[in-house]
Image 1 (cartoon, rainbow, N blue to C red):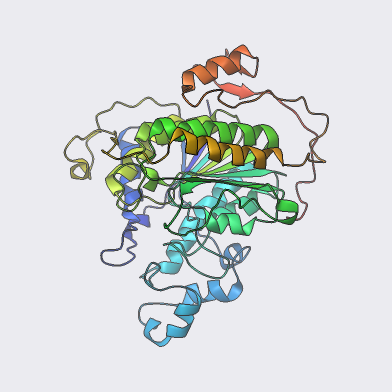
Image 2: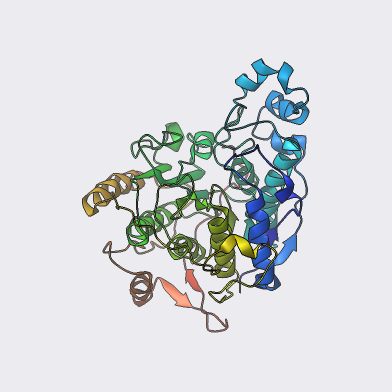
Length: 429
């Protein structure tokens, strides 16, 4: 059984961006309520995050930007128009009551989650309030003020030589990619809507620069993508990347705006398709920091993240939602299901194969790591067919000796067996 550290601040639902703003921190409160009422919490260790300090936040962000976040308020914002423009705190990123404390909380949970992994207190850390992937070093962007993900990765790099970042939000994980674009210690992988869609970045040809060349992987997708199509490319890309990069820790951003029916998103994933990505990443038996992200139909967000928490904790939950204080949000079906919409899938098999060929070439371009010597080559984890199901994939991998099942566990756990020489975990990025 995996040891899980779960972080939740009971104040998180009290923060409000602005009237009518699509980002609603209240969704974290709904998620937590389902986790409690489904009794999933009994299989986890619960923690209230310690607020990130100024020094914590400036490990990535500039001092002047964090000082501005600390001092800006609705009362004094009218006199700071120039600074608000400079830090992009207009329209999508408004000033609201408790802004700095909100940033301290979201970042604190992610940093603490990374610390728990570093200190081997857990195998999986969960902070659904985190995953704010658009924030830049010196400016807010896309509803994100502080990039908790970058801060969490920096913490993980203190003890782990190689960290992989995986992003399944409908939007490109631009802030995280930008932070590590020239690093060979962090591999960033983003699956996202491309074209005229915020933030407009994340082409398959964007692969990193300098030492970081080929350590950036982008999978641009079209609207209406369904579970089968999404998983066909997700499993191949992640399997090949894990095989080549061999991460010592993984950060998984689970943006739920890739779900069907999202207020902003345009994908057509169900809760099962979204969760299958989480389950696949979990199966590698590498420490995982699991974070939230986007998601603007909050009843679907909470359904999905509660369902994924159950998967992480190896808890089987009934389809019917337990009665809770937010029960009316789940009208009319009152289940944990997120059903597909009637959408046209613009991702043809030809398009997916073309993207895969570009990405595969990118991954194969990764140089051999000096610190990864004398390791036993691991057979391919890629699906051999876009139509191969999870069950067929696992059967094939076990037959080829890649995975073994732990007999002493109530639920069999798939483990990848490989070894490598220990590297200098404190080397500079």
